[in-house]
Length: 99
Image (cartoon, rainbow, N blue to C red; front, side, top):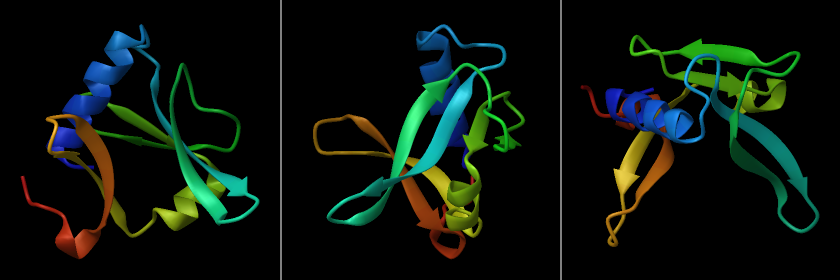
């Protein structure tokens, strides 16, 4: 994860009251029409089987096993849209900004 993503995760978990053990959880959810979709949620702790990835700043990401396979060669970043809203973006490692 990039430094910007780590800062956004820390801010998000603090806002949700999950400052110490909480993190951002990625899970794959099956969709009837479009196959699988990646779902994001703030979680108080990892679930059984989750892979835990942490940043130096304390931000944590919990990866459900299928999500961990999908995201293995990816980097989590944050990008700002036209309205100024921050959105998480999953990028190939080669395209990730170096910060």
